[in-house]
Length: 243
Image (cartoon, rainbow, N blue to C red; front, side):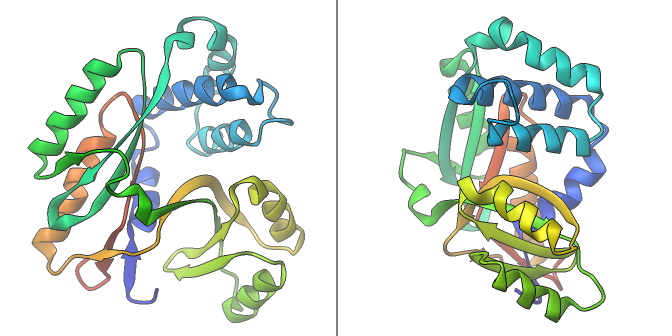
């Protein structure tokens, strides 16, 4: 992946800058409610999806009392929330998957459709782009002073795939093996920066110039800024010289 940045890399850089926004805490609260009600329960020891959300929330400096409040509210107001997924295309023909949590699907669907159109994209039907994505666990691992040896060691641990980026390694696993592999990597002496469930593109869409790159990133930011949107996944690929 040398010389190119996928949206997963760009997203991490933006999250580091945006981590203090109050809006991100409300999104984590909604996500906590969703993953608890999906059947895994409120005990993170038995719900790996909840563990991931809690880890992300703590990494973003979400106050402990906010996290506890979200867990207590799961059977209350948050009970009305449901998950909904949208698919479509953005500027430069990038593919986009939007995951939302809402108590009013009709309202949210219309608002997301409007955002697609305002940002220069087009919402599409179910299956229009999801065939190009696969569910994976994503670990971001900090590089040490011997990255080649580090990569070989992680391959020996049985990870599915590794991409080297400017800020570390993106390590992919089966979703249900995410925390098992995370533990193995940490036991090998490496630092895991983050762990999450991720929709990984099978094929990427590379933008040709800086204007297209700006439009694509602005489009994805527009979707992410909607209160109901939990995650945006894209096959956007930007050559580093354009960044």
